[in-house]
Image (cartoon, rainbow, N blue to C red):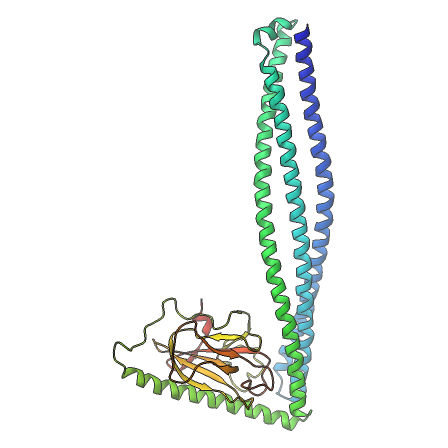
Length: 410
């Protein structure tokens, strides 16, 4: 009788533990779902805000494109700058909203991680309790169980019960495995969101600098022209002449340098860099593309390069090994400054808007070597007339003809 009572108590205890565990998990899931629902609502709100900003930015882009299609004038140029300023401010708002959204997503993932960790601990505790009770059951001999039951039916019920306990044990183990897999997935999501947040913060700094540059550009144009259309047209003409002179000079110099290279002995001949050309600056955000239809001075000449956003004074590195064919820079003038390097296989690279050269003509440089500091701030040495703000103008030429640099960069 005592053994039968003990067996019944064990049965009740396991049922109680199972019910208690289910209730605890259910309660925890209710709390988790409420918090996650709240965070999802906030995240969706930020998504809507980002979509709205995107629509506003597109309006400014369309207006800039419309004005660029009209005749070049000081009025139109100032209107373009005003629209760019408004768009730059929206870019900052957009990035801030994305940062807030990313923070909410990190908070959500952290909450899910905490929830999964709690579920794992609860499941471990539950399994431990079942194992303990199953051990106590195992001390009861099957013959004893058969003798202590009033009928074969009672005995079979107990056997089925033991099978159910074993099945519950298997289910608990499977749930534990699933919780752990979910936990690892959540941790990967957290790492991805954290990396995204770092990237967005860097992007925000760039956009804030871009806004400041746009304001300075507008101020510079107003100072230079004194709101005179005649003065503005004079600056445009000067910018066109500078671009044509630089292009003609680059073609002539490259031809001359290649003729000199042919006279070199095999030991002195340049070797082709493995891996092709490298990026000349650490930043890879392009503000104007090769033959870009949105280039602000396209009515003067096609854009033969890519413009890479680069803060004033950033280090410029040679994209490949080669000879410095030209260093044009006047520290006392804002006229266009650049460096040209001639490489093997008919390639040459040009680095425009430099604020300080670090190499000399006829010098041999290696891939990745520092060759200059970037510029482009309006009115500064090497910036050129009507510059659109700090950036690197980067050209790649094949046999003297400008080609798309992106086809040669990793």
